[in-house]
Image (cartoon, rainbow, N blue to C red; front, top):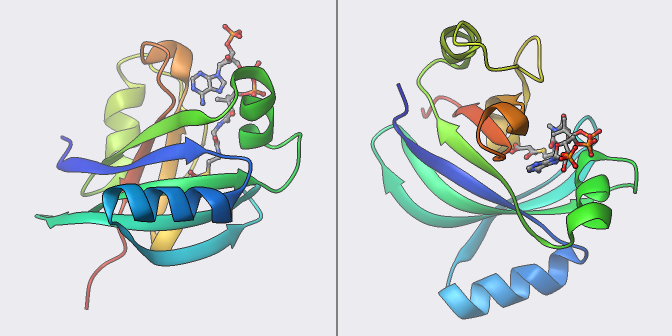
Amino acid sequence: MFMRIDHIGIACRDLEEKIELFSRTFELTVVAREVNEEQGVKEAMLHIADGEGGGSYIQLLEPLSDDSPVGKFLAKRGEGVHHVAFGVPDVEEAMATIGEKGVRLLDERPRHGSMGSQIAFLHPKDVGGMLTELVQAAKQD
Ligand code: MC0
């Protein structure tokens, strides 16, 4: 069902500082920046590679507030890997298939994600402690 890893989301306190760190260490380039009010984050996507079905990225996430998902995560666990996102061809189909297996969906319907994608989250407690995101990348022209 999964085509690829779309991105790894990293929670950070200072987005600009971490962009500088990841760019310098891994020689990655920022290809998109966005503020996503619904998800409570300011974020940057750093491109790693292109593959069948879309690219793969490191996603750096700074919370917009302390009571957002990333804000709470930082308070509880500190900076580090926040979630893993799998690229799927059809997010609604993946939600239905995975939901039937008893995994709790955190979203009833897909939401807006980075770079025009459609996303949905799975409960970390049902996926071995890993907050998991399903991503249907925006269609390429
Ligand atoms: C919380 N938990 C995690 C976790 N966040 N486990 C692994 N990875 C994480 N990131 C654990 C907690 O430690 C706790 O376990 C349990 O889950 C419940 O957490 P909580 O702190 O009591 O509850 P909340 O209110 O913080 O909710 C956690 C939950 C929430 C995962 C349900 O953060 C959520 O709905 N997340 C999905 C949306 C999201 O994360 N958006 C930000 C990225 P214990 O054992 O202590 O009970 S937006 C994004 O990434 C977009 C822009 C994109 O990719 O395009």
